[in-house]
Length: 393
Length: 173
Image (cartoon, rainbow over all chains, first blue to last red; front, top):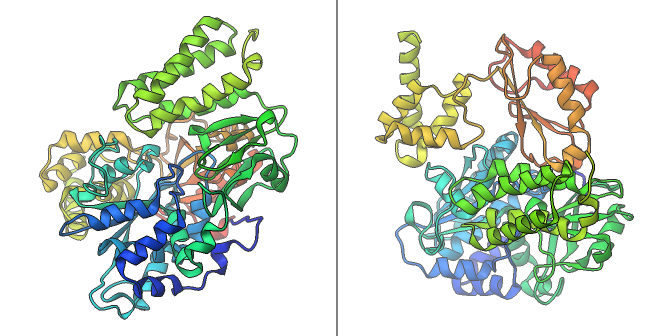
């Protein structure tokens, strides 16, 4: 099930429990300062600084706090969290425990997507082993007064629940409809209590940073995007699978490593990301240039980009939660335009109007889904206009 | 629905609520238990859950209608979900889909008349490097070809009767 092409991954070189023991020997403020200093940003794709998030949750006063691991990996083309949970679940749970210590939480929840139900047995076993070793439960690692345990909550099949406030709604037993922000989850999260929601990979990196130090992490990547990133590579290339690269790698270097030279475009960041054409393969994959939660999909010279756009929009039409108008009604309008282009009955003027509608969705949708769902279509129209227009029946 | 079956459902829900809890955040886990054992969530089940949790049944309905793994209609013993997202699409999901429809004699969204198989589409299931991928209940199959469809269905038929809604035996493939 695992196909990693950059062995060994950093994660497989991290000694078990070392990160947690280091963390427990530190003062909470120093621990959060260490994470802040590493400049680790959310690996789910949004890129919010982890240290800042933890600091806010640590400062909040409440009777209960929660650490939530977002394992609702649903972005098309992403499968790194599945691999991390299969191979390195201990690092993830260790990172969650460190998070619990940092913010003063006793309860951790893994929100695991329904499609990954087959991983649950394995994860429950890892949790049971950790409890048996005293790494979870009362007085974790013999540290007086620090109790922490983790349970798994299954998702029920909804892409939108990867959005953190929708995930919290789902945990509370509601439809996965994103909340208005503020208040933010660090202040008013699960059951109205301060909650940190971090991606699977983010927690694993936290553990790695505690072992190897924030300076080590910072010495890789770019000034604004530090450290390494796990990429999920699929599509028209010789070696699809999992790769680890420093942030700031160019698209062309990545394509060379995966055997995807000669591609006509690469979709970076999944269906909600951007389509980068061959002419721009010198751009870098980093938060300041083309950001991604890890999804890299390679399109070979013969791929029909309109077909790609249609597949993405069909996805968003189905996965929109339907709560806000721009997303609920905008995505079907874009899909309708794609069908018109396919039948060769779309005027340039109408295409222009739909592109403007897409831009309106980007600024007026309530959550990240509607704000980013037009990205792929707009970038495909921008770069492959001639391929889309003037089609015959 | 027979009275005895209603009573069984009522007892099951009471026992799940005992284990999981009866606050609102227990709603989805309880619904998943019902889905797992009964293959769908009936109007009657929704009413019982609503009573148990002290919420309006329409709240339960709104949740069931939202999530794609919770179903109103009785599903087959084996629910086959084929991934239709772009990576699996590029690796040939259309051919697999056609073969599934041909072999089962139903279209996507339908259940076979004998109640054995339900065919559904799924959005990206995180197997993009090994597509086309499909799930049979909880079990994942990768690099599925039209030829392999026959084997998968055959393994399901063999497992039928011995195993309940769980995964099919590892030994079959």
